[in-house]
Length: 180
Image (cartoon, rainbow, N blue to C red; front, top):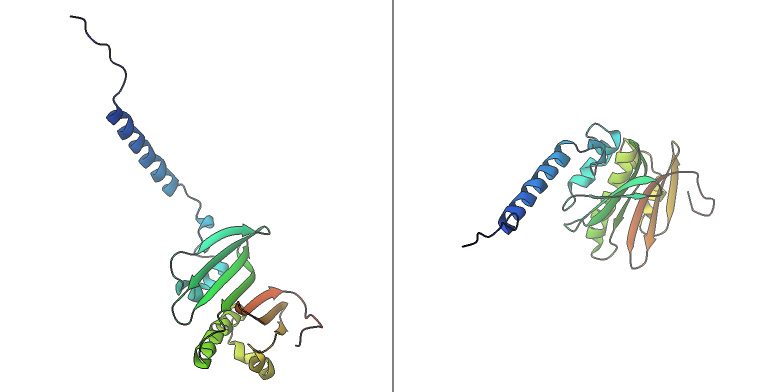
């Protein structure tokens, strides 16, 4: 009787070897990962801490992508008050940030959503928005576009039909076409 020659390792051995290799690679990737690539940046980064109260209220993990050479982190919350927040970071500094809230619903709900946008302004400025925004601008939020300059940043709001109310903080100057 002739003996059969082995055709190589069995399918089970190949699959288990592949699984062990994948586990080793995933473990190595975890331990060798670059902490600066985390969604909120390094834990000690000012950018990671500035808008942290807003990002903590989001559902799920924030998403991160590169937009115009900046790292953009976004997340949303469907819970009341619903909002979407983003920040664009260059190294460890926030370059731009924004919040969008829906404009639909009862007046009380809209007032609560506006507070989320004003919280963005407060977090970026390091003091309550009501302490530096003029009362007429506060009254116009949600009614018309507003813009206010403070320490090299433009604090702006823009109601957008069928989209929502957008709050942004950007570096820049006052646009003469937009009411101060």
